[in-house]
Picture 1: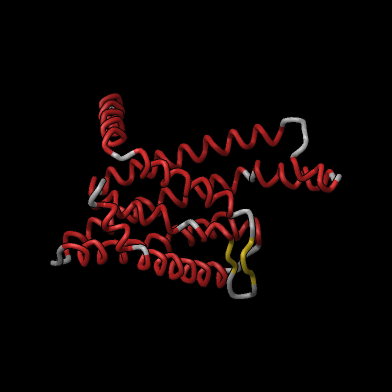
Picture 2 (picture 1 turned 135 degrees about the horizontal axis):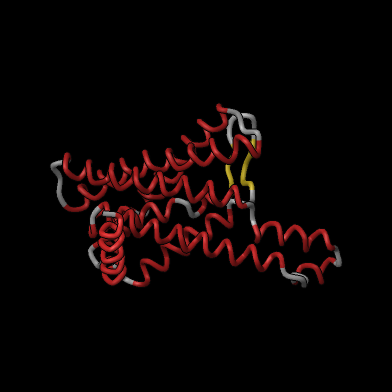
Length: 228
């Protein structure tokens, strides 16, 4: 049973990776890796809300997931997302090993301060718990995005761009909220002391911001999906 499942998934992954255009897959993976790296820098923080710079790119993978859902189906979109998460974890392991090696970053020679070198090592190496939390939250939100996207596609009686927009906007709003909320609950609350109020407002605000960006780029995404 398990062997048969592994075999079928292997075939499914091999097939979908052959079908997905290399450029689209590369942009998807790069966005996932970069948003996790940028999440190390805080963008805004007060008693009600806290945002990091990862939000600058976190909308892009979800836009591409909506395109993948439309063209390849929900299960294959989730497989592509899982593959990107795995590559991101591999990238983190490489960064972690590099941060542990001797030697100095270029900024050290500009300042002469070892504090700068240690700070860069900590940033590039990252926190294992943060990366693991990010991977888990994205896996959960990717599954939610695929399920909601396909469910909406079956319910709406629209065609063309309106059909794509309806399933994309609804699935993105829900899945982005789930992604932000799960990450905040398992990472930001225990590590950074976020309150439940900050978790909720951050999740809503970030999901709203990411939805706005998806709306702005929806026409481009729709046209891109026709070339996949």
